[in-house]
Length: 637
Image (cartoon, rainbow, N blue to C red; front, top):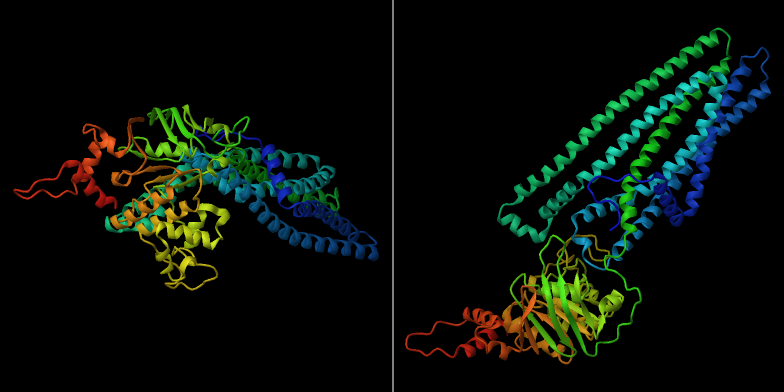
């Protein structure tokens, strides 16, 4: 990923941030951007015009022979300018609101489009990327609009400052210079504070993410059972408050510095205003300047100080927004975490075999190798079962077949074509899967199944057929609203507003397992079906029915089955045992169990041992192999 992840916030160009923000604003709502530009010009010039009309009117009033007609026109002009400024303020508020919503929508669209471009899983396993992504989400909502408003307020303020500054120079150049010089330390101080604020957000981001994690555990239904039973509530509550207090303390230290700076700057501004007022009173008393000059001098000094203050704070806010906006720009500019093929090849339907050739893989340079030169061939039209102890590399094998990662060495070949030379979306269109860590979506039953093939999510017949194949249809039919029942108590279904038992339901683990299986079966007919512990949450009878059905569906197709329950894999065409990142044994069930010293045979007999009753005195124990098969059949169905 591009960008600095060193732990300190990088310096970035305000100009680059402004250009990106205005590009977003123009793409999102060009009309509102132009409208705000017009109101900014009017808002900057109208106060200066009002001050001059007021000066001329006061000079006319104090003249020896005031002209009534001129005074009427001047009063009318001041009134018109007041109406224009009031209307401009209202129009600006409306345009800002419209633009803010449009920019937020467009920036969020671009952000999550960038997230979806990440084909693999590597970045989603990086804590620092999650910190950057969280800040990117926050800045996507506010930073672009803040930068746009900063630019517009800078334009408006510059126009006002130019007018008032010219007036002060004409009346008292020294005071004009003093006002400008007073803005310099304010600008330096505010820029330093904005840098510290942005750096603070980056430093406390890991703690704030942990705080959110503890909050989720305290309110998550799945975690509630252990939280309640083990009495974890106070412990998690305390952890959450610890992270929050640490962040609050860091913010308090920063804010104390902000207060000191603001007090000093306010005192400097007050002294300058007092000095200007004393000079104006003395000059007017000595007839050096007119009453109108006093009026416009005071208005210009106040306008210049106010304009400079707004300008300085706007620049500082823009600087801070740019520092935070950097996270957004980094994420939306990041490339795919899987290298795309330089010359993409078409992926033909599988005709011969999938081959893993001398595959080495680990999850990072500081991590141990998970796969160590693994070689494996999956012939077309056959069923392969993969077994092994936890950590042997079975799930990693699945991730490589789906190309969630690329191996560091070796290759995965599809009929001789390296899958890295094929567009990843095209590869995945040919794969169906049921994962061990399947998702429970807070959606309707039909949507939970239809997500397996989004193009057919509204095809009720296909959804029902998948549910029937997975043995989930009868369970769904008994739900309050059948396939349209919301499988969640977090959201209302459709337009429901009342919280009733009909609003949504919770399913058992086994019922969710069947829905996950149905979701995978929405892709029936794909070239490769991956079944990663497809029945882990089912009872023995249900597991037997599922595997019988899966055997029918797998017949003649290419499939990979991973299971800890060896009774479920015994009818596979070939079984491989993975150990220490390599294929240790390979064969069918009969050949593997025929070798009593083999790993598979030992695993199989160990599982069967727990189900075989101890023989009574004088009875004859059946042969070990027959007993093991019979016992395991009870487990797997």
